[in-house]
Image 1 (tube, rainbow, N blue to C red):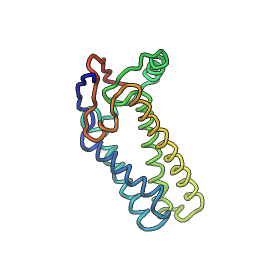
Image 2 (cartoon, rainbow, N blue to C red):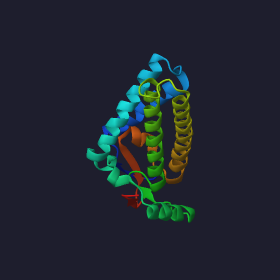
Image 3 (cartoon, helix red, strand yellow):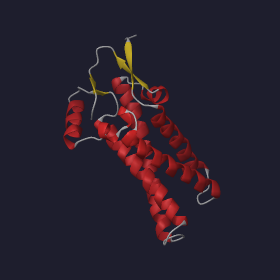
Amino acid sequence: MQSCNEIKVWDWVVRGFHWATVLLCVLNLFILEEGERNHRYAGYALAGLLVLRILWGFIGSYHARFAQWLPTPAGVIAYLKSTLQGRHPYYAGHNPLGSLMVLLLLTCLAGTAASGIMTEYGPLAGSHLMEEVHEFFAKALQIAIFVHVLAVIALDRLVRGDLVRGMITGKKRVPAGTRVVDRP
């Protein structure tokens, strides 16, 4: 077996946010009844977690900060070219496509939480329009989660990064001799 080094990437806030979000999304998307009290409470908890994650994106540890992992168009293009040429770069944190996925997931979460709150409170409370907007974001979130899970599985097979373990321990395995790219 090839030897590996470990690098610390995700702090406890990022990991806690991730796994609490997974749990609450599973509850709200697949188990709890829409519109019922527990569904709303799980949604409020998600909204609170999202606020924490956004704040942490400005003041948190290095790999948690948005400034570190927000991709540039040039970075995305270079990543895609390298990957298509069989030279898949290994990123310490998120690769450029992973960064775009995180932005999509956060946007879908924010849209779902905000529209869910607005179905109960505000000028459009109880309106069919707000319920449709909420359903749109919830469906978009489901699709984004599905693509995210497939991408994590594919990337783990491609670069042997053991991403799920990394999101549990905070450390990613890096095969010996692998060049690690720090920013997307």
